[in-house]
Image (cartoon, rainbow, N blue to C red; front, side):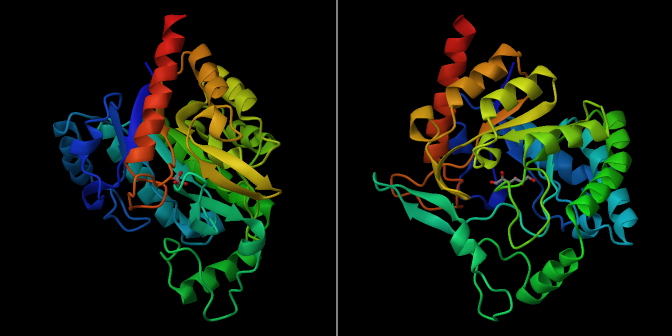
Length: 347
Ligand code: DNO
């Protein structure tokens, strides 16, 4: 049974679990311990308390998204062993708590990035959008450069320091550092009953000259080949990879679900607006360039039993909240996915 889930940002999320409970098809919650600083160990007790809270609301905690990977690990700095040991302890603890899916990413400095968080669509809703020209003109040498609001986890000084550090890292260095990390954490994940699913780079190309490697089929194959283990798997995100036209999401879903190397499915739709530019859309196939129906057929064909969630939605009905993570449009997305899944089950 595929586990349809909903991402929830914890006690500070403006959306309470009781609201998510009213979306009839949602069985699981995807979340993280947001109070633990990047790199530090997730204590078993904190995981168990949070899990209890989620279960009391009537859900299973189906996946952790994410335990962030410390920049020292991605950079291959001397201190990485210390952070990797802590990462391993967090994996052990989640395993002890009975949570078996871990999403993470290996993007340098930035997680997903957009040029605007409030692009207006013709129907009056707003969405996140990415325009490469706008992003390329951000000048980090200017003291007053600005990025969309959420990209402020680092202060400007630290950000510039990090960007400089990555100037000396090539894509091959990133592969080396990822391999080093996986060789240490995957055996621990195996022992702990945890499957890790790397999230692709979003968007799937280089930004600000940073080396980004999880962005196409060749590289996904390379990643999976580093360790042939179910614990070394994918979070397949249709909207991230699909922003690049050459990533055929139907075929890739078929391929990787067929090999049981997807542990977490992110269903998001986007519309490409030019080379290296796109905006996000509502989930249905007709709204964007991702054939969501065919993607779901592939998951169904391979009896996918992992976690799935509607990813980024638009802001509709006047809702305000975390960019991409409002309640309303993601709920519509969940209903759409569940409807298709039910129909596929009838065949
Ligand atoms: C964006 C998300 C990502 C994802 C991380 C996983 O909305 O899909 O932020 O959670 O990249 O580590």
